[in-house]
Image (cartoon, rainbow, N blue to C red):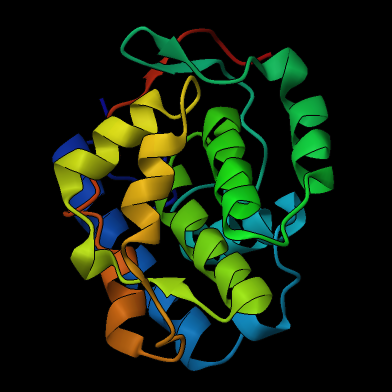
Length: 201
């Protein structure tokens, strides 16, 4: 069953295709229009702004905190009742080194603040953070899909693997449009795995 959406699409496959098309177009706008450059790096507020820009044409909840508990397989993301406190903590985490930035990214992944589109929004958020703090970004062309997904699944327990994978893919080509676009390729980083564990609260 498809998530409720502004497009009135009821087929989940059709919705996923339209979501990818629209969110990619909007993500490219963020880059081409210099909108990202005006945002503060490393805050939940910025992540919410990115999410709203990408998905506002599709979902009423774009840029808004989720009100359901969600999980991937047996792993549960931050419970709704602790979500705001978790995001406050993430905002306060240091972000001056590569290790600190990836630790912050891992924590944001555990928080998973939105019902849908967390991965795309967070990768843009991560690259903005790396760009502003270190003058580096991830070249997603160098990141193997399977290795990345497995490392992210394990990262809440042990983040050495994801740090190794992403560090090996760092580049100083921070204005390269092609590298940026690869990071928003949802066919490469499949996100349709979340299940909803409770009703609206």
